[in-house]
Length: 492
RNA sequence: GGCGCGGUACCCAAGUGGUAAGGGAGAGGUCUGCAAAACCUUUAUGCGCCGGUUCGAUCCCGGCCCGCGCCUCCA
Image (cartoon, rainbow, N blue to C red):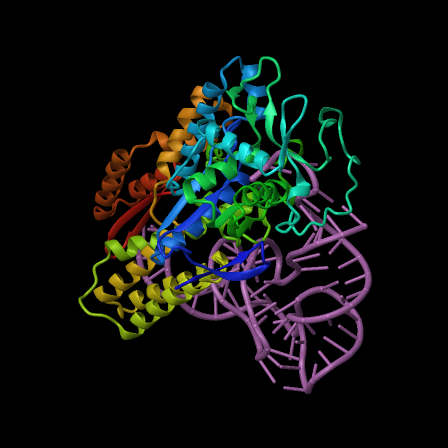
């Protein structure tokens, strides 16, 4: 099955396959590690994860590179304010970022290169551009890319810049550029700033240059896919194309994927709007990492997502339904054999699911057949029309579902515990939802003991005691379910 | 101003030129010691508004209204 993905460059949905017949070579713009990641960042990373997971599910090996931008103006500024080296400053946020990615079940890219470790490659690229007369050095020691050297500029974002008058928007700092639209590939060091001593002068790389240099280093001068948030399309990706294609004379990435922004409660997320949330903020409020992941991915990547707390609750409940069903499959007893109707439903659900994802990663559409299957299977089980063979088939469908969605397997406790530990150390305990603390204070062993005691009480028909225990557990977020196959419990 | 996206039931949301997936919430019922879980039933003659094309439009075309994004650092 071949993925058909929208390509920003051509404006069309096109098949995406490895051009070398081996692995799909893809690059996605990673974080600038100057602060904790917010949910907007993670919406993009989650959808890139959906892409790579689906490719792998369809048997396409992936060679995925994601950069870490560990030097830029904000980093230099913040590190100086904190009285830290930029290395020490960025290390803490990079660590937090990788932890957050893991919490959201986002797979690690094959390569995660750091900008500061590839300065030499970037300098080479500037030199290459200089030789092609496409980059020039200013009096102040910065290097700029000459837009006039790349007539195709604007082909990704569909911008026609020919009408922009040179000099119209030149600001004071950039007075020595040849044209207002020329962008920096190398920034001269200001006194006291972190800088590298190189053949092209003392300074640091421009942001756009980093991605060009690192993507080509790991993936070659031409590769299959480049992804990022919609805001990066212009100017960041446009500049990458200009630099890279001018330097190599070859097409850079042939397929471009852009994930749309999310809104929070109907407005663009911004600190000034008071609707700005990091992943950690949400975990401390008691939302599960899996619910956050599902909420972020439930609306297809090409549509704006309105992120709301109602949506988070809804995602929590939807996941509960899936997990309850999964538990019913794995813990229930089923007679040997299978129900031909069930087999057909499972097969159909699987193919509808795969087809929806293959169709430009339509995650919303892909969910539907899975939930259909859950209902049909529950009904068949209730009616005793369900065999061990059906269980096995459906477990395989769910495994493929979770290979991309990654929400059924319950790994939620760990991220929450880590967020709590972090809050303690960061002095954020006031932001921890009180119920959350109580919940985590109760160990699995303690729950098991109480559940056991309740079962005994029930057998003795001491329902008062049994209900008392049930209420006590419920208050701490533990739900008990009595079924024919015994007692199950779960954390809310 | 330029480029682009969206307006589908109480909420989120998919979708197709031939008559509206799925999830969540609500209501009623079955089951249960009571619950929970699960299942059943139930909620859009209708898909922003007005025209047009068509045998037929939510889906195509035109206009209008509303919301949003990018165009500057930004996922």
